[in-house]
Image 1 (cartoon, rainbow, N blue to C red):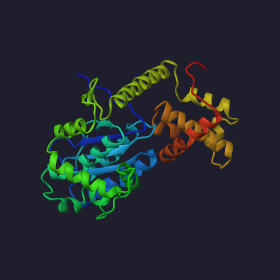
Image 2: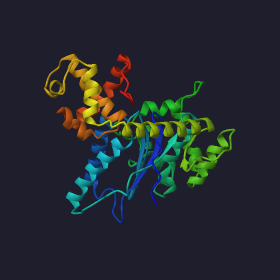
Image 3: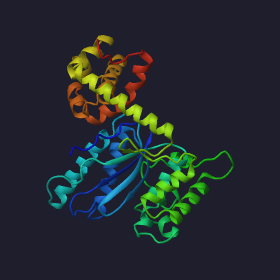
Image 4: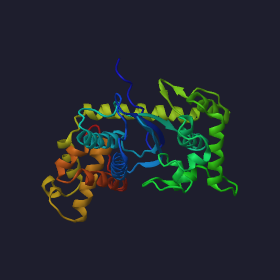
Length: 328
């Protein structure tokens, strides 16, 4: 049976889980962990996704990740491939390291996100790794320790985490966070307990499983997530039917900017050339979901540059009123 397509929901938090295959372990030594974190940070910076928490286990990891309008695969395809190449070469393995694509669940902001982060960060207690809150505070394989100031994790968005726990009153967000962590440790021994806590925290008692997908949020959020996913799939199918490839995209961009493909392949800091590169990368990797590698080859830049240019191209497209048309 074919696997169900990933739910495409942009600009929200996702709970992501990924497992290694067979009997392998995620890290065989501390150098593996350092390499994993270095690669994660590299591709987070390139995609612009925000890390709100991560926990390492022997054979899998879990994270909370806030996406932008880039597809999730832009991070994980390249990140997992890079780590697998390093891992296999170092430890004399071959083939895949991870079990397919990561599993992901979109999560609504507010109380839902508060409980999700707390659920993620108390995972080591449910796994029997940490027995007490003190042990959890000092456990370096979980970013809870970074929130509590006991460690440092690169690229962790501490400000965004604490903002989730801010209230209208004067209570310190870190105090609210700590209370939520303790509540989760006391009441949540399994995933179903977490789901029950979510239902009890809101007036609606509806299921978090909707149309074949886990979606953590209110009925309004779930409806909006499914609508966004449907609209994106229809739009992408229409782009395919309209034969939007690199050649057509080049014609489209260059018809709206006074440059040619040869112009933007040349090195230079001309503002018009720079804007054309940014527009091309934005439409290629963000709108049409072409690969960063094929885009880089088309305009003679690095894959890293493509990701940076794509983020900058969105505002240019908006300010200039340039949209990708299905019929041109």
